[in-house]
Length: 495
Image (cartoon, rainbow, N blue to C red; front, side, top):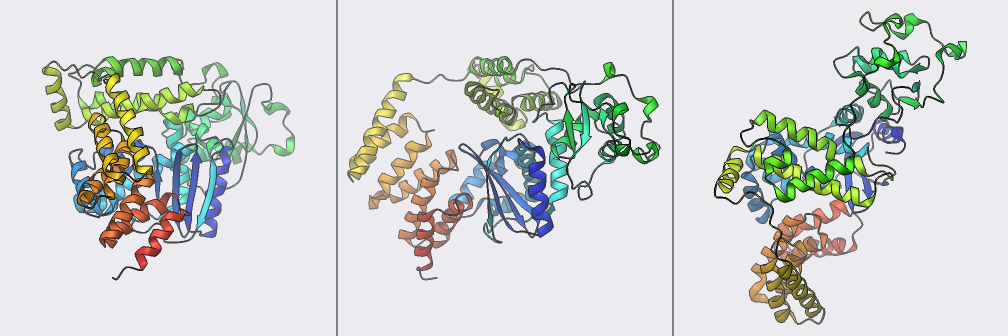
């Protein structure tokens, strides 16, 4: 975030006041939210596919990739996502996945500059979810460490030659580790980066990451070289005795401070645009092994290392500042999706074996470019079908839209409109349900499909299924009028 201490102040305020509600972050079409119950983090959610709970659990190995079909099947029968996962893998694995998801989402928020914020106060706004009861100070500290280690936020320009001063409040509420506590104590007086790093190295983590984490938490402020404070000229009143600065014997004394030239600054990565283009090129014309830059015989550890290195460098949150052009941001989204696809396939022995069989048959694993003529025809049929829906000519609309879905079955919008058309045809309502569910599967945040499903279920008297879809809409849009009207209709149904 632009003001790195702002997230700390907001969450610590919720913690201190024991507030319950939904804290929503929005940036364009992207939405992320933290749900708090009595001042603790209950869970977090995101509109980015890579941060969905199932994607997180598959990546972490707590949900086998083939089980995704079972999750979809249970959700079609009216179960919520959490309910389906609990039935398949059990409460401990779901809680582990929820915790990982919450920390991953919170870590990514440190890179969001000036998002739109809204807090919807109230407890029980999103029922049917487990409660992590994760203390917000603990979540803040853990997520800042993760953001620093994953390079989700860049080091300040001139990091090696600049200096640091203390900033903000709340250090007493945050569970700092040994390196963080030593570095913060050392900032009883201004320090250059070269002076501060040995203190930050008192723990097991990389000292430069410790310092960056403190900056994210709003506990330390960077000053560029021209503005960096000179320790020798600092006011005497601002200086604390050295014994108070480094009370632990293991903390490096000033005499041991390395010269500035020896400051360990992370190596510069290739220019972002060039690296993203290289990933895109490998994805478009090569195999999944090529995407990760590994040989086909690579073991799981090599695959894991390649994935994490690329995922850190290509994560879209690294490219959201104004210094990156829209084309670079779009390339980051595409590259990150390709890297994720390669990881999810190659880490799973069954999925990898199937992919390798495809390669051995000469398919080459190359991405299909798709038939441009089919794409054009599908779009034409879709526009025609949508116009027919507007004229309430549902039979003809369904026929046109079936053609667009046949040509492009992966388009959520085509599926949605086919479902809408068929929902008005009594004999095709089962098919309508299937297309609307598929639209939601392809795009979980296509709220219009969820609203159509709710209407369909209400007309059929399926109150539990209708309630599940309405709840999903209100989870992301608590003020959605259509959802509230449908909920009123749901309450009128006999129980």
